[in-house]
Length: 299
Image 1 (cartoon, helix red, strand yellow):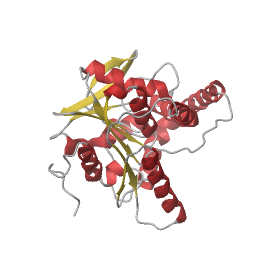
Image 2 (tube, rainbow, N blue to C red; image 1 turned 45 degrees about the horizontal axis):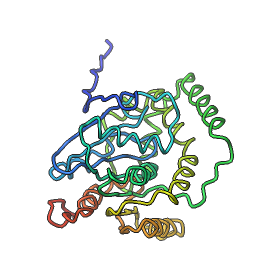
Image 3 (cartoon, rainbow, N blue to C red; image 1 turned 120 degrees about the vertical axis):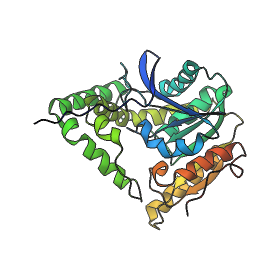
């Protein structure tokens, strides 16, 4: 006798932003804080951080086009489009004032670009183990690379690989990027077995160097607004040359942006999973309320 699986309830709602239905989840009350995850990540990666921030902030989480539960976009991602998407999402939610933006990994590019392109809308910036590219110079035309990526994503989908291997690949990446043990999220299997999400992941990976180059070109003529900035780097406790070099690069990013440098430990690249309290505390510290808020340190 076959077993019928009940569909999971959608946790958020859908808003059409820039013509694309985006999955959005808003919780809490107070000043607005936007959480944006790294390459290929979804809204549920921020569950623990959002729970800690909701008593103190209006927390906005969303899935970029094609990821999580959001519909795909007609065009591959660009840095400008992702930075502007944050503003347009806030407008669609009725939040027209400045907001704090938290960008993890690749989304660190988006968060910084948001602050530089829309300085009047930025209240603070937290970059969580953010991507860094010192001298990005993509070698191939963007159109050629994205066309190739679209073909690869189509071939993977035609072969049924997202359905067969997508959730397992997601779990392997999660295990490699954390120092703790974290159970799978109920939406992990439902989302990462789709061709839609697989294509979005391939396109984000393919356009990464172009987004890095866009940010490098944006920096000279678009200064950061005079808002608090923190760079929060992951440290897993290892003393390898690569890990120590990464911490120094994160420290250098903080200095370049005129911000504060902090370390989250013990944590892998998915800081929000390993030490969500460190991320929440860093958000609250941006406005000077971190020491008064009830965000407890991990024992």
